[in-house]
Length: 510
Image (cartoon, rainbow, N blue to C red):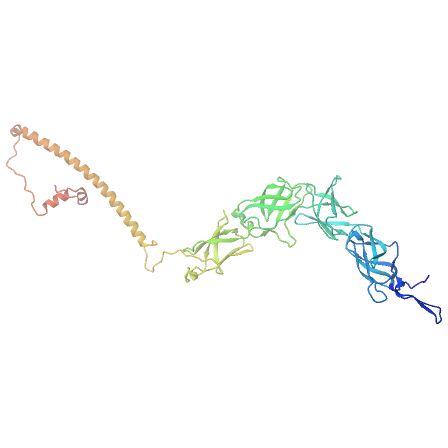
């Protein structure tokens, strides 16, 4: 037996034997080999993220006598665990870095030049659960330690107060936390046990889940509409016992389940208009049911629920009184400001039925008119309760066709229109009068014809009874006056027969 120092370097060596005198014996080099030896019965514990292990034995050097690296490896075989980055010490131990893993009683084999020289056992710490956090997407994060990174080997068990259990779905694992989906159901109070491989955690809880509002995007214009609130764990909130407000505006609930609430904001009333804005307001869900609490729409950044911001889609022409109509959406009247070409548009009037149009007074109207409006473009922007919208460049148009003269006017916008109206009225009166005169003319002709018939009858009677009449009446020698035979006699006589002439001049020469 030859006893060598424990820190002797491993490898092939020459053995030189001497008697203390001049006689020595040297063995061949490859007949003498020193091999590292692992101390038996060593066990180690480690976190799931890994640990530096110190392996004890003899001849534990990582470099041989020739200065070459000693081919040492440590692994668990089919278990997949490894211990790398070996470093030697005083020859009685070496260290390696155990990789991440989970589970208990893993056998780690040590190999020297691919030959096993010993083994030791490694057990990872069991998982431990401490607290719970709720994520905005409805998932649950368990905080703890030694929770591993293997999702496929993870099981989360939800334990209700009556002892019933159901498994959740682990979607992400880390050494200090795990995230899982809560099982579908209507219970918000439970305890939890986490199993990783062959090891189970402590029983954590019970914890009570709080309702969470998930959506923060704009959902409704300031004029009112349907608001869809997406969230999670609205277990104890019912339609009859739940109230929702956005700012100071009530939102009337139309439907509710454990993940979605739909409510209606009625169209704005003028008296409440400061609260119907396009700004940001806290969304609050409250319930009169026992065990429920108010839920606030607050993100980690402290943002509130947002109404839809204003938008501009079109504009009207600017009329001669410098008024313009702007079309768009969410024209609330809280802190309303409109700029046209960087100048304010004053005295805005909003359509409170649709909140999609408003009129305002263009203060720089005279300045804008000096440009050729067919070639000049101006920008327009609107701000409602802190939310801005800057429109694309609009090309404004002006109502044209009326040019005011410096001469005195009759008071009408355009004398030409007045003359046309008077002419039409005059023609109408003449037509009405002519119609009446023509009708009267034909009536008088019929009357004259009737009178002529009577005169003829009277003459016939006089001739028939002329002898008898002569006995009783004497006419004397008087004769009728001769008619005026001047040049215009016939013309005057014919004209005098026209009813219109007789009516106008009231002359009857017949």
